[in-house]
Amino acid sequence: MDTPHFHQGGFEARRLVRAAAAATLATQAAGQPFASLVTPASAPDLSPLLFLSSLSEHTRHLRAEPRCALLFAGAAEGSNPQTAPRVTLTGQAAPVAEAEVAALKARWLARHPYAALYADFADFALWRVQLGGALLVGGFARATRLRLADLLPDPAAMAAIAAAEAGIIAHVNTDHREALAAIAMGLLGQKPGGMATGGGGCGRRRPRFRRDGLPPGLHRAGGRAGRGPGGTGPRRPTLPPRQGRERCRALSGGRRWRSTKGCIAGIMVSLTARAPAP
Image (cartoon, rainbow, N blue to C red; front, side):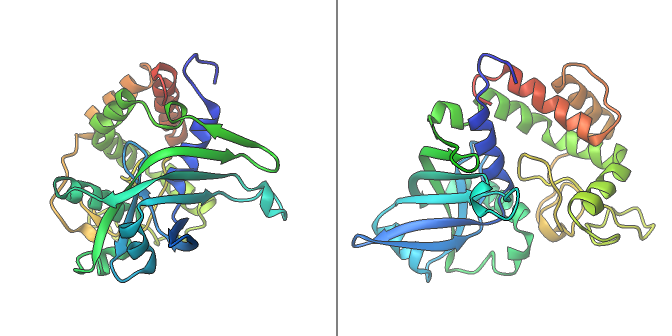
């Protein structure tokens, strides 16, 4: 993308982080490195969110030494694992402030709805990693050190997406049902009837857009649009589909799109082009 503020490496790193369902967390205790599997989500500002048990060894490590690293890896192009794109983020971890827990926990659960079974256990808490740096490896022998200015999303772009999110989701779920079903079955390997119930009393099931950020994807949310995982929790405000279409059109430069892919791509192109560091 040929814009003065666009950084391809930063875009690739953000895409890897937001798409990852799992990552490797590196901590240390008394100088001894330790690695463990974690299931992250990302806050709007890209900082990784971790839902950690106080009984876990890595949680005890972080309480004593908050400096840590996270490895996010994509899929390899072939049989050589070193062709897989990956990004290592470094930073310092800390429990999320109480005032932010409700919103960020809902965001984390939207990414990992199965965790609703233990989300209220007393020994679990939400942590956030404040980023300090990143190393992107785009494939074999393709390493790039990223500045935070190139890695982090632009605040104006984040605000625009947050303001339009509910309306765009309602618009896509209403006007692009067939495309979502095709994505679920053709790209994500889902079977018919395996996605979240759309409601309406007809007994049919259809996929719904994920609410946890970009890039867009699908998950087994099991709940109605505008609610938390499993259809529980307070109802989130949503715009009518018509207003969602208008928001979608405004964010994508006034263009009309006939497909989900075009609609979302237009929004991202527009935001990326006008944001200092998308």
